[in-house]
Structures are given as C-alpha cells and as structure tokens.
Amino acid sequence: MKRRANVFAIHPYTDAPRARRLESLLREADPALAHYTVLPERALPGSRAEVLQGIDNRLRFSTAVVVVNAPGLHVRETSTYEMIRAVEMDKRIVVVQPHQDFHLPVPAVLDGHVYRHVGWRVDAVGRAIRGEYPLDTRLFDIAEVADRRRLVGALAAGAALMSFVFVGCSIGAFRRLQQELAAHGVQLTWGTKDTRVVANHALVFGTIFGGMAWFLSGDPKSGVLGALGGAAVGTAVGMYKVEKRYSAQLVTSGTTRMIKVEAP
Image (cartoon, rainbow, N blue to C red; front, side, top):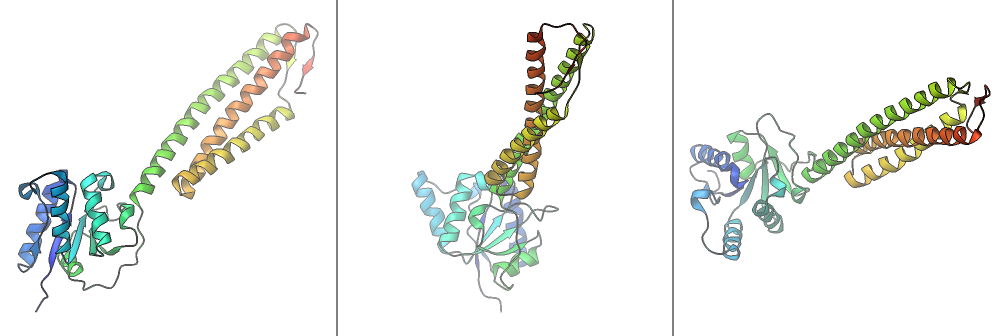
C-alpha cells in the first residue's frame, strides 16, 4: 500500500493552467494525494503577511514540493519566497521540466536542494513525490547565471558590432587621406609599427573585456565572447589612433615632395 503524501506545487501565477493540469493528472493517478497548491481559485485571503503565513502552513504540512519550472520563475516574488521556504524546511523538492525543454535553467535558490528532476510524466512525478527514486545528482544550468550570460553576450555582441562599424570608418578615412596626399605627391603607406599598435590595443581590450565578462557571468564561453568583443573595440581604437597620428604628422610637415611616411 502506498504511503500517503501531501504535495505543494510552486508555479508562476500566470501559468496556473499548467499547475491545474498537473494536479488533475496526479489526482487521477493517485486519489490518495492531498494537494496544498495555492491556485488562483484557491487564493489565500488577507494581507500580504497573512498570505505568506498561509503559504508557510501549507508548505509545513507537505511531504513534497513540486516546482513547475518555467522561464522567469526565479524573478517572481511569491514563487521565490515559496522556494526559499521549501529549502529552509528541508522539503523533498521535485522539479518538473516543461515538454521539449528538459534542460531549462533552474533557479539558483534550488541549487543543491533538488531531490529529483523529472519530465512531464505523471508516473515519474508521482514516484518522485513519494521518494521512490535515489537522490538526483544530475547537474543543470542555473537561471540567474543564464540571465547574466545572455546579458553579457548581448553587450559583447553590441560592442563588437559598433566597433566593426568604427573600424570601417577608420579604414575609409585612412584611404581618403592616402588619395588626398597622393594628389599632392605624398605617398602614405601602412607600416609594421601600425600593425603592432592595432594588435596591442586588440590584445589589451580583449583581455580586459574577456576577464570582466567571465567575472560577471561565471561562464568561460561568455568570457570568450567578451574577449572577441573587446578585441574588436581595441582594433577600432588602434585604427583610430594610427589614422589620427598620420593626419597630425602630414598636416605639420608642410612639404609637397614625394615622401614615404611611416609610423614613428
């Protein structure tokens, strides 16, 4: 005979239909389950403090807590409170992953406290609720880290895109300067020292941006993306410095002889 179990489901308030569906399936599979989930139609009355107290009471009498994972669950105030309290009460926490998105990131508050990750299968959820599985040691991505990784990636990509535009403008300005000086008998060439200036700037900016991206996101891939974006920024800065230096030298030379100008 199955042991009686009480279950509390944590879900985004805007995704109540999924929690209702899960509860309905669990009731059909196991009528002995007692459900303490706070659905909109069973909303707790009273002030905010009274509602939180009611949640605490339901959690306290639950033998298992089911987290219906969804994008953005970690930024929802009530869901976060429920997850924190479930961890503090040392409840058996089961994370139900959405269909076709089994590796959806899990809120950081649950890291190290998840008894089992399961797919959208009633038999698997029911067994996990009753503790019939061994402890789950599978590693999953953390939602907060994934958010930082996406933000760092977007910033790095934006910086790289703007830098490439800047590099294009610098190359265009350098070529126009070459053509203008050639008309006055002055030959302007790109020297080895110019390449070193651009390469040094790309290396310095790539190291700084990559290190910051890795530190902020905690993810090596974001560090690489940040380094690439930083290298693009450094390339743009180096190109700009080379072009401005040549402009300054040639404006002050005051000569119209055919000369070859290289970086000092």
